[in-house]
Image 1: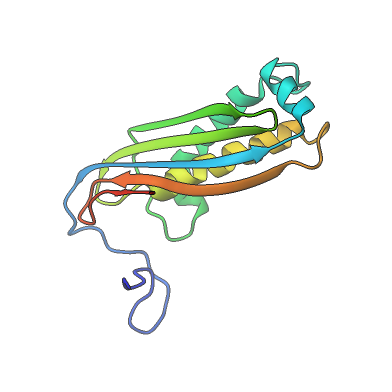
Image 2: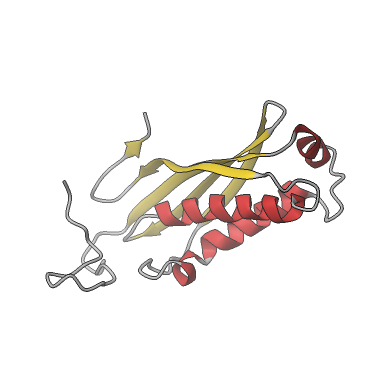
Length: 157
């Protein structure tokens, strides 16, 4: 098992020192699922939700969240993200799949940024649809793949 890097020898919290790590292209992909009533999904598809185009607002919220992850997660490094994309696909009649891909040229990975993008996009869908569907469920937020850095590539099997 790997060592928990956010604690020093005495167990105190710390931000990991990345100053000696080499810079490289880092990429992370994350996904999540939002379950809604079929009628709510149809409103989203038809762009008939009273608050506007749900998926476009959620896309912007996810991208903005990726850029601000260092402000939200206490020990995350603020990163000069070079790319953030949030995409959506409908799964069946009752779900929206969210996928986020984030890239940076830097000394630390962007897994948290991709996960934050998915999380905030999902919460935005919830916020925009809650007036017509209180039973929305956000689930399966997870890292799908990461590349770059000294730990190498990883992909969910």
